Image (cartoon, rainbow over all chains, first blue to last red; front, side):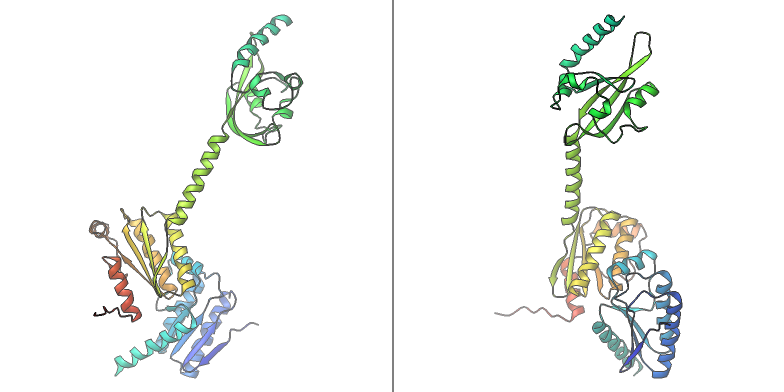
Amino acid sequence: MQKIPILKIEDNLIVSLQFDIDDRLALELQTDLLNEIRRTKALGVLIEISALDMVDSFMGRTLSDIAKMSASMNAYTVVVGIQPSVAITLVELGLRLESVHTAMNVEDGIALLKDLKTTDTETND
Amino acid sequence: MKSKENVEKDEIFEILSLSPTPVLIIDKDLNIVQLNEAIASLTEISADEIIGMKCYDFLKTDFCKTEKCLCKRAIKENKIISEEVIICVTEEEVFYKVIATPRKNKQGEIIGCTESLIDISTIKKLEETTVKMAKEIMEVANPIVSVFEGILALPIIGTLDSKRTQQIMENLLKQIVETGSKIAIIDITGVTMIDTLVANHLLQTVSAVSLLGAEAIITGIRPAVAQTIVHLGIDLGEIVTRASMAEGLQYGFNKLGIKVIRESK
C-alpha cells in the first residue's frame, strides 16, 4: 500500500506529492500529518504539489482542511509549487484554499513559514 | 419530337456558352447532357468527351453518390439547392458555390437539372486570412513585460472578453512560474469598459496568481471605471489597487524591499 512520506526538517514537516493521489490517500495524509505535528511539535507544514497536474474539489478541500486543522495545533501550512493550470482550475471551481498560504517553491515556502513564525512570536511578546 | 428537343438544347447551349459561369446540364440519371465553354476550360478533357460522362465522375465532391448530392436533391425536391462544396475537377481542390436548379420539359416533368458553379475560393481564402490575423493580433495584444527583477507588468488595452482574459491569465501564470516573479502589475488604463463579467475575470486572475505564491495588483483604474465598479457593486475586496502603474511599481518595490534613491550630483 502506498504511503506518502512526511519529512521533518528543523521545526517544519515537509510533504511532497509526487503523483495524483486518490481521496483515501488524501485523508490518510491528513491523519498522518496531524499525528506527526503532535509527535514532533512542528510549527510549520509544507506541502509541495508541483508534480500534480490536477487538483479536484476534494483535494482542494482536504488541503484547506489540513491548514485549518494544523492551525488549531499551532502549525502554519504552506502549499508550494501550484502549477498554472491547477491554479486556473481551482479558481474556476471557486475553491479559495482558505487558511492556506501559498509560495512558488520550497525555498520561498520555508522563508514564508519562518516569516509567519516570527510575526507570531513578536505578537506574543 | 426528337428534333424539337435538339433545337431546344441548341438554344439553351447558345445562351450558356456566352455565360462566364461554368454550367453543366445533366439528366435525371446524372449523365452530363450539355456544358458550356466556361466549364470545359476548367479541364483538359474536350467538351465532346465530357458529354455522356456521369456528373460524379467529372466533378468529384464529398457529396457525390450520397444523399447530400445537390442534383439528386434538386430533382427529388423540385427546388433550387445551393451549397458551398469543395470540388476536385483536376488534381487541385477548389471551393465552389454550386447551385442546382431542376430542369423541366414542356409538360412540366422534371427531366434533370442544371448545375452552375461559382468560384468562391478567393472569398474562402480571405476568410481564412482574417481568422488567422485575428488570432495573431490576439497573441501579440497581451504582452507581459518584466519591468524589474521579480516584477511583471501586464498592460491591458481594449475590451476584455472571456476568451481574452483566459489567455491573459494563462500567459501571466506561465510567465510568473518561469521567471519566479513575486509581483504582477495588471494595468487596465487601456480598458475602456468594465462590467461584472470583466471584473470577475480580473478577480479570478488575481486569485490564481496568489495561489502560485505571487501577488497581483491592479493599477490604472480611471475615475470612470472606479465609478462603474462602485455602481455595479463589485467588491474588489483585498485586492491591492493603485491609480497608476508608477504607484504600482512603487508598491512592488516596497514589497520586495527595494529602495530607489535619486543620486545627488
